[in-house]
Amino acid sequence: MYKKCILTGLLLLFFLSTTPSPAVADDAENIAGFTSGFSRVLTSAFQLPLKLVNDTFTQPFPLGVLYGVIDGTVSTVTNLVGGTFEMAAAAAPYAKYAWIAAL
Image (cartoon, rainbow, N blue to C red; front, side, top):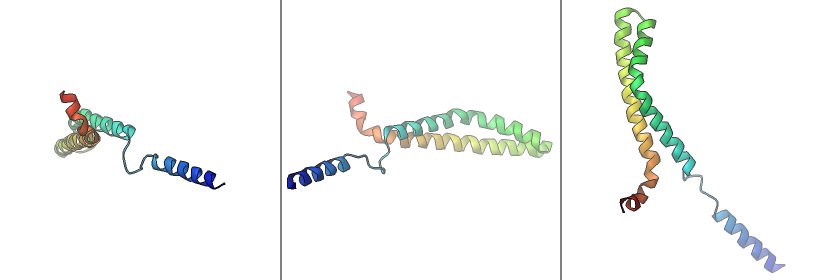
């Protein structure tokens, strides 16, 4: 009986210690973050024309063009910088393997 309790306790301790920590991002989360950042970088080039056309057609002529240029520029820069940082944050856990790639 005593041996079964010890064996059960050791097995329970083993299985609890090998479960992944929720604080550490796994590979799927890193890949999702990288692809999200990559799509933000790719679509940032289309933000200026889309915002320009949308604001030109929804607002009066001189202000619509001005608002579209400002809104599109801010959106383009925000998506470009945010996507770059999102890709860098997703790739950061793999930086420790960079020396292997250099060989």
